Length: 310
Ligand SMILES: [Mn+2]
Image (cartoon, rainbow, N blue to C red):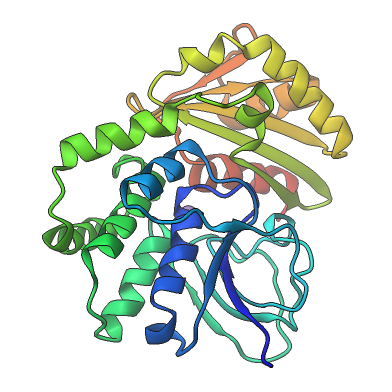
């Protein structure tokens, strides 16, 4: 029997990551000519839960490590963010919208990485090229990827292509966007069932920058104060996480998705030096306010890599 084929995104899956795995599986026959099971590399967040319940889609199974499965990887190529057990031998395809993260392959594989707002938009382009008809539920899933990852087109990661794709998709989905975005962002910000540890780790990514290991967590919310009231405990936990994971630097940003600013938590002297060097702002009570900064990928990671190495 041939190995089972799965689609999966990065650890600590965000909405684009989880829904892209689902979309790839929904169109598995059309894109790859095979049956695919969508899985996630960790529990999905409240925003993802909300949209899956709304669309009556089953939550994907959580997979802790890859054994014999053949893998279609979505929304990352960064080895540090990939599920355990994934090697070049079981990698079949990559669909992503991040910087190339150093994955290798011994044989040619399907690879589609674009500089665009979300993996959902990349999947849309592939479907369009193949003349695949898109059903209403899939259109809503792709719209959700776009809105969630580009923060309703306000992040600098958002492109004109995402806007165009969104318009085409909403001719199928016919969503009342004002209500849709407000409900989605409400779910994104929800702290229901979320522990302090979840706040830090739900959207946390590790990076290798030169010889340094850097951890960056993000919490996107319409109400930063709901997280900032827990700042002292969060900073304490971030310090512990930094030690446990042997990180050289550990950052955490509370992103205000209405005003499009961030509160960057400064947990120690190393982080303070680096953040001041890069952004040049003062720090008040362990927070550096970053005006018009909302994107880890485009605004936090690149200047860190310029300082520390790629
Ligand atoms: Mn993404």
